[in-house]
Length: 119
Image (cartoon, helix red, strand yellow):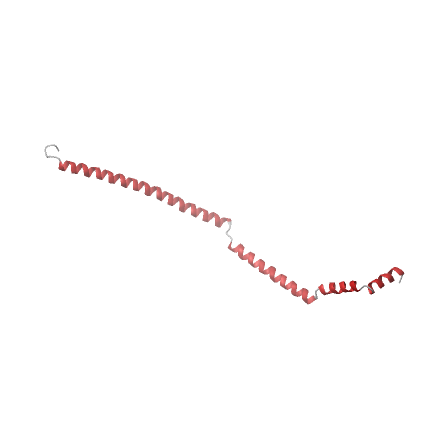
């Protein structure tokens, strides 16, 4: 051993702080069993996350689903609007018919009430 190596060894031997730090560092090193256990837990967590992602993706609508739903809603709205227009026109026609009948009724009543010579 040369002098520099000897001095380094003496420093290591005489340094309780370095030994303490070394012991603490070694305590942080996992055993193979701890490593395997941690690896298994990590794998399980990743598998759970993948299953959750799969479930989310399975429940998500595809573009085709969205298009089909949109087309259905548009179709229903168009039919409803057409129905509303038709009902409005029908109601207007019905009201016009009522007005015409009412006018005819008034005319007939007026004719019936008129003296025989004026009719």
